[in-house]
Image 1 (cartoon, rainbow, N blue to C red):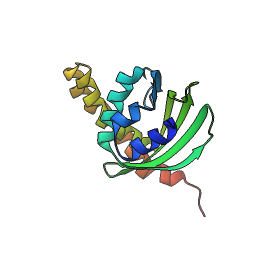
Image 2: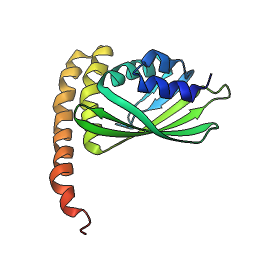
Image 3: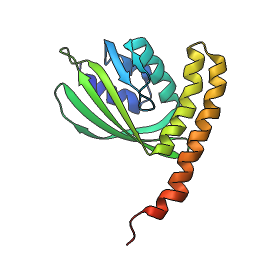
Image 4: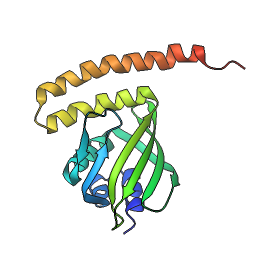
Length: 161
């Protein structure tokens, strides 16, 4: 099995179960949102993939670099009305399965929107319904700040022709 090809096809077809087949049993996924936690093992990563692929639309992988034990993938998609771009650093084990995934997301408003969409469902699945109600409030403040910066502040400091 070509785990990277399976991973790509599964992401584009929103098939979390298929994506899990490309993972080693001890896979680690490093969150793009915070350094405070990682997802460990197929079950935790599979849960994240189910939640994420339900929210992210139109994943289209555009580039791939590397073909050995380290591969970088890049995709474009949408989350709601926002465009989202993600880079994925994949480390493969000796059997060719994905053993580590590090995610990088831009722009910042898309990342904060992603946090708001995924956070409540992940909290519910972790048995924390109270936290599921708090995440959108805290995340909403971060998203409003990021969105305001993206639309109103940063265009003012962009290079002038």
